[in-house]
Every structure is written in C-alpha cells, then in structure tokens.
Amino acid sequence: MKSGIIVINPIALSATKYIYNEKKRELCGKFSLSFMRHAEKLCVNGEGISPYGKAASTCLPALAGAGGELLISYLREMGEGGILNALWYMNEELRSGMEINLRKIPIRQETVEILELFNVNPYYAESEGAWLLVTQDPASVEEICRKAGLPCALIGYLTPGPARIIKNGDSVRYLDRPQEEALSVL
Image 1 (spheres, rainbow, N blue to C red):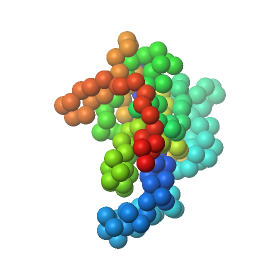
Image 2: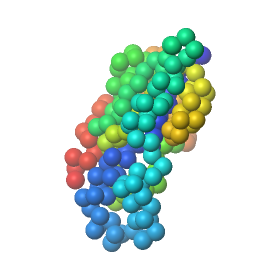
Image 3: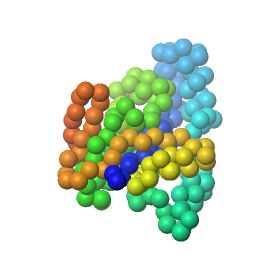
C-alpha cells in the first residue's frame, strides 16, 4: 500500500493575509467590492479556515488508532517557503520520492488572485497553519479531519526512489530545490 500525502488547510493563507494587510488600498483599486468582502472574511475573520490550535488539539489525538498508534508517519507545518519547500524537506527526511497532483493542492481563489497581482508564487509563499502529513491510510485520515472540521486533501503519494514528480494536467515536471520565501520580493 502506498503512503498518501495529505494537506490540511489551504496553502499560502498567511502570505495572503500579509499582503491584504499591507496592500489593502492597492487591492481595493484592482478588485471588486464583492471580492474584497470575501478577502476580508478570509484574511480578517479566518472564515473557512481551521486555526493551528484546532488542528493540533482536535485532529492529531483523533488520528491515534485504537492501539494508540498514530495513523500518520510524518507531520510538518509548512510555514515559511510554502508547500514546495515543505515537500522537498519531507522527501529528504523520508528518503523517498513522490508523485503529486498540483491541481489537488488546496488553495483559495482569493489567494491566487491577490498573490498573482504582486507576482508571488503561492506554492513558495508562507503557509503558516497549513500542514503536510503522510499516512498509510489516507481515507481514514481524511474522514477524521472532515469530522473535526479540518479542510484536507489527498495530493499524492510517496514513491520508491528519488524522483519527485509534480503533475499538472498533462504536464509533468520535477520538484526544484528549495527556493527563497516568495514574500521576500515585496
């Protein structure tokens, strides 16, 4: 059985919040009032996003099986450098390869629009509060997370060997070495 790679919470939200707070006037000039209301709900109220405390206090204990054994074999908060750097470090630590579907990575549309405006790659943007985990039982982990109210997505699998493959539709590429935090360009 392949080990599944799961992401809890959408990526790049902390980068989105940072830009929203620092560049709100500029954003208001580029986006509709409706879009800005949605962005405010996300960036100010955290609507639809589970905070770190909830992930740690609700989900992680629930991932302990009947024998007290965790259903997860790897856990990492993404933080600085975003999901692509976190995936690189995960593969280094686990000494494995991977096959990821880029389209399965959870990301909010507000994040895509706001970061694109400032030429910030969301896949390298700070993702505090988003978690990367590896499990032999992806279906059970997804069910536990959903019951706990944590948004999650199975984005791919570990593979034997060193290949770190990222698929995006018909396009296939290999994961680059870690890159500089995307927000450092602002």
